[in-house]
Image 1: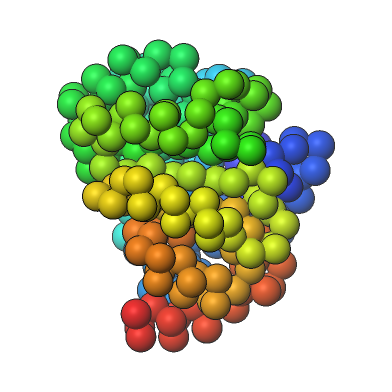
Image 2: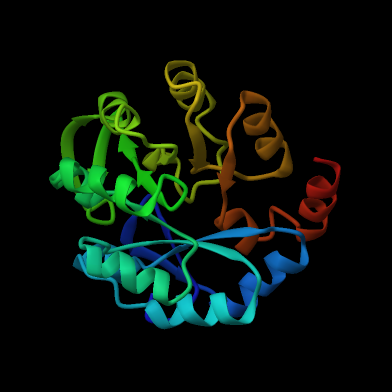
Length: 232
């Protein structure tokens, strides 16, 4: 947010916490701990419907060896191309997939299923978009199925009420997604508070875990993360 490291609680822009470390400083800490990929969200872009923090993406991509998954306000082919030009390894898009599913499907074909990820974040099983500021009546599982049948490989799912709460991830939700779509690569987000949570998600078969607040608030120690990554 405005080039700074920030977190929201349950997607609420009025419940923003800004941290002292720059996004690059945080990214370097993750890299030093053995993390290979970061999920970078342009919070302003998600709210406004147009990405504006490309400079942060460029800085992290240019000064680390991390693979960056970028999201927030990506609506057009021009947005995708610009994100790649600034160093994104892949992008995650949510709102355009809800508004124009055929267009998003064309991205999977045009740019490749390794570089296009679906953001399917939900409240009570219904997809939320525009930085989680707008609810829809789109069923989460039907939404994933539509794109899975069109070649989708990666989906990032956040149980929004869990986001930023550090109360533990929604294991049953992710279990159901993987049971319905065993071939999908799932990124689980929301509620992660410890290495134990990450291990539980790994045991479910989750491909990746997104965490943030647990690190910024000191509940998830980078030394413990480093040891876990080595053992895993």
